[in-house]
Picture 1: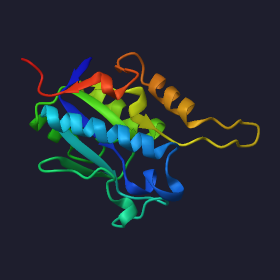
Picture 2 (picture 1 turned 45 degrees about the horizontal axis):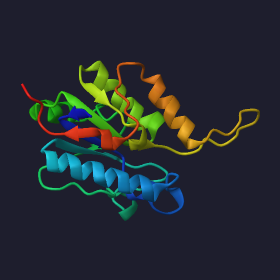
Picture 3 (picture 1 turned 180 degrees about the horizontal axis):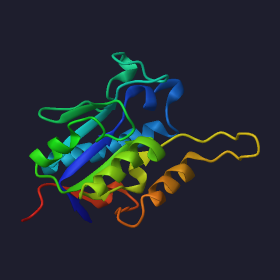
Picture 4 (picture 1 turned 180 degrees about the vertical axis):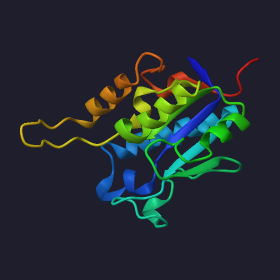
Amino acid sequence: MIHVDALLVVDVQRALVMGDHAVPDADAFLDRLATVVAAARGGGATVIHLQDHGDRMITHGTDDWRLALPAFGGEGVVEKLHDDGFDGTNLEQLLHESDAHRICVVGIQSEMCVAATARTALARGFTVVLPRDGHTTYDVPADGSAPAVPAALVSRVAEWSLGDQVIAPDRASDVTFGPLEP
């Protein structure tokens, strides 16, 4: 088991897990993340939701833009304009205010927002745990001579690109949550 004191839920918004633009196996993915969020809440870990401001698939302020796993109580919601959840936001401040050091990162799109946020977290001195079943993305379609790439492979390559500093357990269920012992 790997113990962390904070959970970042990246861009788990309704448009990306429901309807025409849902990631592959969205229902199972959302169920898994709901379990992870419940475990973090139950363990007393800091939970912060990152929310994409909107783009061609997500229109800001609509039902599709809303979080699929709503924030409760004092959980932070950080609206972001860029892939990197730290870029132009108060994410780092929220993590420092909660005395977070080891963060579990889960969410949507592995190769974009998840990887960019994890990479910056590493650069700023946080320990990053990225469970392999806790992030997902879309299939990359074939383009000219370039073959299609299944979403699972895209996610694996995104994880691999972060290097050996990231702790990558196979399952989010291998992560426990709560304050770290001094």
